[in-house]
Image 1 (cartoon, rainbow, N blue to C red):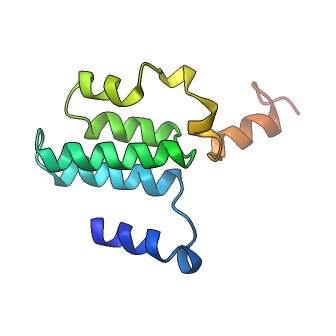
Image 2 (image 1 turned 90 degrees about the horizontal axis):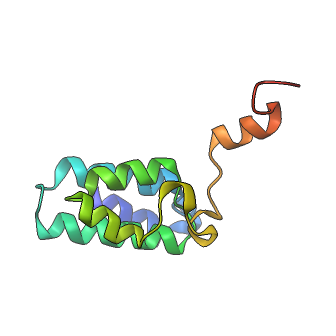
Length: 113
């Protein structure tokens, strides 16, 4: 998974830039493939989440996968830097375009046309 991710990042002209789904999927790989509590798991979780924040790609999927990959609630809170899911910095989320977001905008909160 790590090798494939590196190839994607290094060949963005061919594959496009990683998005929130790419980061969420990599965090899922970290959670499922690396031993709980290992230094490698902590390093990858931190690296991926920080890169995701700097690219403005933190969405719901990334947060749930990061929670799974984080070794503890304390580690999750540390990575979130005091922010909560409902109060994320705009810089962290500015490039996320989730399907539900578009649907709500298009049809309204209760499905009105």
